[in-house]
Amino acid sequence: MAFVAEKQRIEAITLPVTDVDRAKAFYTEQVGFNADHDYQVTDDLRFVQLTPPGSACSIAIGEGLGATLEPGSLDVIQVVIPDADAVLAELHAKGVEAEGVDEQAWGRFITLKDPDGNRWTLQQLPVWSTGAADQCADERLPRRGVDPRLSDSAPPCFPAR
Image (cartoon, rainbow, N blue to C red):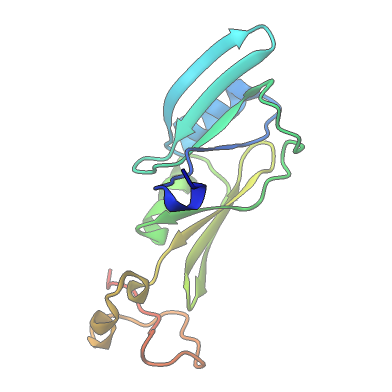
């Protein structure tokens, strides 16, 4: 059985944190993740799995998970979201310090950090990335963050609000 020939999916990414309960509360109560598992396996091993709604990939936090990264050092996780404005408003309403919306030709971005400083990037994909480039020719769709170097085949437009 060849690894590259099989159907694959990433199941979990271990996120280094200093306080498991504080991180769990942040991700479930403020960011809206589902708490899938919280097991104290031994005195030295606790496994907590948290999943964003609709995601096939989870984060794992805990104690004794073998992670070698320092808490707060992870800054490479990106999540696709449907509406950057709505998500930013919801995060702010729940007390999350998040920055955005950063308008780019390849998407609209929000960044946030968890209590340990691990940084997340949330991206609203442009319409053309889902194969709907023809919709962007419609005058009713506003163009945001237009990069003049882009061709008409990949217009940076988003559904009207």
